[in-house]
Length: 187
Ligand code: FNR
Image (cartoon, rainbow, N blue to C red; front, side):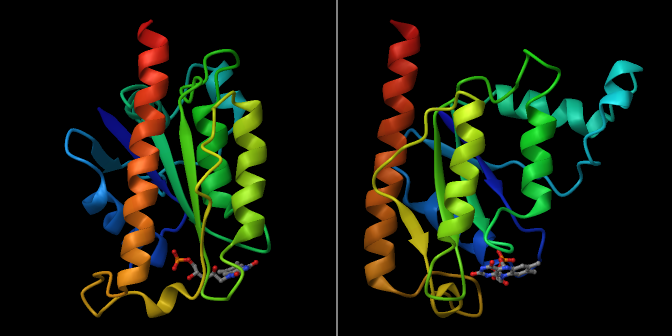
């Protein structure tokens, strides 16, 4: 089974991406995680769609989403909301109307912050969009990762045991959540 990972930051040294990679190493056997890039997506504009001129990157992105059994979002908080790049990816994946590539896929959210609040605002702003997209979003465990700049070494490897323990539980829960929904769809 495959979980597509959408990371809300384009930064080379992004803590969100480091965390996404760390989670990818902790998922149980049989569950694959793959980051789906979103930093190459032009802003959504319905005029392009209506003219049959959708950018190839939009189409490729939607195909990659469709090939996934579930989606994990790992994002920083920008001004108590989600980064515009991530919102744009949500919008691009949601169209054409009635054909959303997110299409009811099970989802989970991790928010990060260098501060103590762990990106709570971004986490819940994102959940609001997932309601509209009909993506069942894992409720527990919630993942608000604060103080994220203190969790990694120079090579981007996770160094804090308690965080690894938490993320292992989280990764197992996400895998279970995705499997549960796959089983429901197969039934
Ligand atoms: C931020 N940052 C931030 N942090 C936070 O906890 N709450 C916030 O509302 C914001 N707002 C915000 C807006 C903008 C425009 C930027 C660029 C940054 C800090 C931000 O979360 C922090 O730099 C993260 O480390 C960025 O994520 P990556 O790139 O490390 O994944």
